[in-house]
Image 1 (cartoon, rainbow, N blue to C red):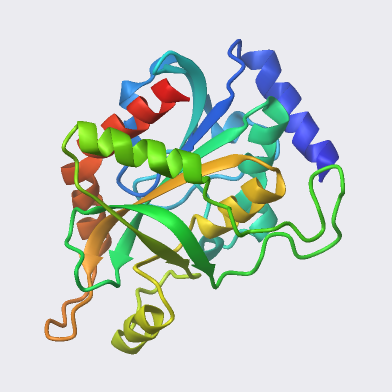
Image 2 (cartoon, rainbow, N blue to C red):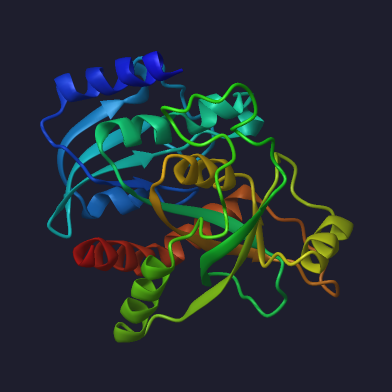
Length: 269
């Protein structure tokens, strides 16, 4: 694993002049976050050794390098999902490469279903904790050069970054939610019984990504900040099927707020 990580990182260094310390993962419908980056170089995933391709709608399979908020950053314009048929090591490989490149702060966004009935479509939720129902990406032999065999997860989402984002939101009159994200495999959306179960065990939003990336980032001792865009909300009295078009439309409606939060957060790092 480490040899593959280093080979990929070396290829990127040979083709990119920037040396980012901040990484961004753009979720479904949120690829336009890269539009606020002063772009210096774009690499297609297909050109990067050992990288998979994102097949999910709304994910563009591009690694974008440049500056944002006065800092050198890299952004994944498209992530990988377990439901695409990839292994958990494939899904989280880009996070390993980011760490090898020197990234120490990871910002993740996703579109998610609202489990909390008080939420509304278009709400932005800061993820303060998660419930992972996907296979753990750390299963298998552990390489101590990458991280501890049993990494702690009690502070997986960095409190100082959460506090910073809340201050930025208040200053810019952006209403934020805060809660627990549940990651499952997908690709089917949840049944009514599953929505109710997830709510009972403490989830506020549910989606098909993010938790594996956060686990690997914690294993790699990276600071993490993550947000969910609420694309649909389950309510027992209204039984409407969620669609991917709704997810993408919700992203368009809220992306300006999320882009502002990301940019201002990076400025303060």
